[in-house]
Image (cartoon, rainbow, N blue to C red; front, side, top):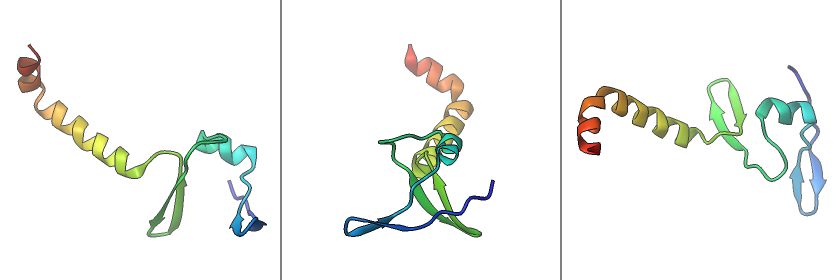
Length: 75
């Protein structure tokens, strides 16, 4: 999907208006937070916090590796 967006003046700031197709792809809506990160090929706009996703991936790996220990501790 290639979409061009125009930067518009909004009060003393500048902003873009995201078409509903872009919001649908991001699974985001009015009031949601979007995260802007730099990537090797430019920038990335996501609806999920990349820092939180990395922490959850690490937690899932630990839980998978130490499943038996965690099961004993839960008793």
